[in-house]
Image 1: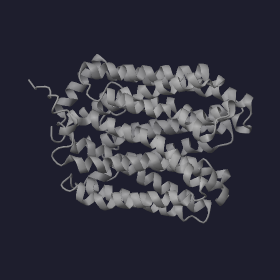
Image 2 (image 1 turned 120 degrees about the horizontal axis):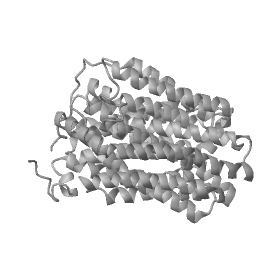
Image 3 (image 1 turned 45 degrees about the vertical axis):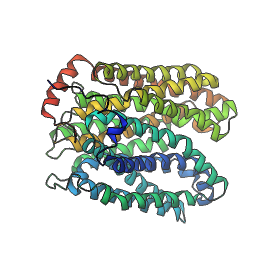
Image 4 (image 1 turned 120 degrees about the vertical axis):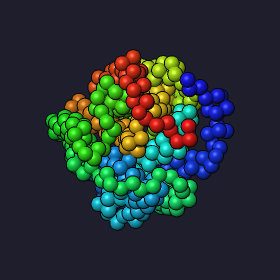
Length: 482
């Protein structure tokens, strides 16, 4: 019978021992670049549009970044196998740096958006490779603490990102933001060959699943079109088409010789299937607050953009703190925390549907914090449960898919929120009436997603799936170093 790891074996000292500290630092830097870049850019976009004349393409900077990130995150597992983790991660840093340079030096909005697309691709690869590195380089007993640290980096970026962007925008030098991230990306890429030395080498042979990636690109493109469409009908149709194509990707992948996702990733009876479904739906349900929360608070409460952003940022802060609370959870405790986390997300979205139209700060902060706690309680444990069920064959693609699934959920959730807001008049003008209507219906539309995510999380921790996990775990090898 396998003995449970001791407290010393699961502690921070052991996590950073045996040469893992510099590799852990590299992963944290990659997560920081991904998180902070998106948050800083959201703050400086008014300044970018004013200089480059790109108000008509305002949301394309987000849509392009997200589309590139999804495609890159999904392909990261296969690319790490083809090139080796070390070479692939260095390439990701270089692509991210080139994207930052293009945006920093952009003479017009077209070049700027091309830079944002490259940043999304580089960022998606960096995030995907970080998940692969975590799966390969850290023993399973440390995964919850590693993911808690990743959550902490996101929380820090939520606080510092808008502040950094605001300071550069106020100084009239938004381009310096991208030069700053270009330097960080070059440092990341330069350090990778040394810090990831000795990791998995290129295996070749398997190839790239071009058909699934092409279909995924179409689906993501349809969802991105909904996010930038002025017509509610076109937006809703695009979301429906995008979801249909994403479902087709799962079917194509299940029959393909070279797969994009692990075996039975679309089967809710498996750990991977129920885990991915929960991550997708819960992330989608949370996007209403992320996309529309600041605008609603500015219009109905008169908050500044910075303070409105920080009120919504209560979600990220609560996520970070909650992630450390459950960092040592295992066994039955892990199962309970995943269910509690999903329930908290559902409760947070429900509170927003009930109280956001009044914009009462106490309720909004409480709802954001409860939602964040839900993700903090459940996300890292879901990641660990899915990783623990992956076979050697699927370890790279299954780990990198953790990021891509959540990013896809974010894109779908943002598109649904946008289409809903436009249907109630938000897109025709920012009035008190249209803002209050959006503050109700955006979150009502998120409730089915939150319910679906909660149901999938309960399936993930249910008896039938746990039995399946035992069978999959018997075929899967333990994490590196365990």
